[in-house]
Length: 258
Image (tube, rainbow, N blue to C red; front, top):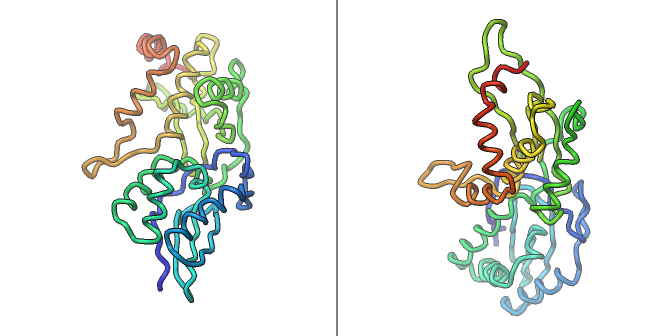
């Protein structure tokens, strides 16, 4: 029987530093008890021998094949911590080819794309300590307050200062960005000024962290970077209203800064 595979998502970011996973590189340490428990589920449903391997694959989240009466299954490590509903769906998809179960598993993968390791190394050194603001401190505070400290492998750096042509002012400015393939947040260096409050930079970084944990979605054939769930989560930032108001009052000054 030919190997079957479920979902080939775009490469995302490094996995969360769970107790049974190394923070970088392809080698992983799997919680053997969790692997055996999932294997027993598969054996009970299949009614025969099962060989289950856990991977850190970036492209194929689930593959399975049958050979000489043995079901061989490979699953991404994200499934070891999945709720029972998802594990039941995983077993139903692998053993019976259940289409509804496939959808449940696919939705779980979409919600956990941030657990897939980075596919492209970051070019050059990172600059995290500015003249005024330290981005590592800001990232650490946000991680602890809003993400239970689990996003410790997200990278951050001050970006490059792109100056407009002489005699011309900026018309737009991108204050922050997130690269999923590098799991890297870049913050515009125009914000490294004494007159830019720390809470505003934290707001920018918080926004980019949400892109890390809430991948873009497609609705009606169109990509949504900021779906309603994203915007709702963004408002959980402690100084959201204050930060939005500050940006509105100071956007002209940010555009003029060099």
